[in-house]
Image 1 (spheres, one colour):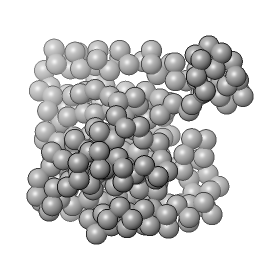
Image 2 (cartoon, one colour; image 1 turned 135 degrees about the horizontal axis):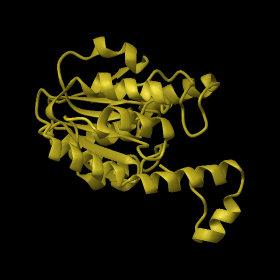
Image 3 (cartoon, helix red, strand yellow; image 1 turned 90 degrees about the horizontal axis):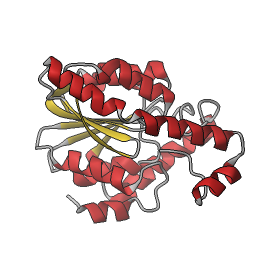
Image 4 (cartoon, helix red, strand yellow; image 1 turned 120 degrees about the vertical axis):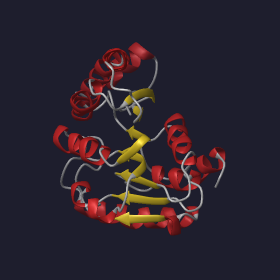
Length: 247
């Protein structure tokens, strides 16, 4: 196991959309696992989050990284047509894991997440979802892989209350349910725990804490619209900062 600072250093030159506070949530979740546990990551890109998870997990924990590297859902506004770049992503992913010294700890499944269930035997202790951000695949990942998380296990979702598709999937599958307790978020990375007692007071309070995130969600949508319309200069005048795609 590396310290958190060492894990951050290991990914300092690795491309990806993950802030230090988001990395810390991933690190803590992985560090809390035990020998024989399974960590599943959906959406690895070039390995930034994968390296953090592998750096934090104790020996004997299985880490499964699922990413088809197929050229779709590659990044912000990169939904399709990036097959050539995806081939490079795959090579860079492997090189980054090797350079960080964690390649031997990670089982990479180069497949779409809905076809990868057979590659994971047993229940999942930590599930990190950062795959396709459209509503249907995001909901499928949260619902189907979420069912495989052990009671008391952890679910982390990137681009929550930032991506429309992911946010709608959360509202449908998690917000009003009786299993997943909302723990909190680091920017758009939300953390849930499979330990909600299912009572109506717990469910109402849990839904309320998530609904409180919607103003931040609408702010992110406005930022995306302004950037997409090439009005970043206006945004900089309002905020005093260079515009950044919310993540």
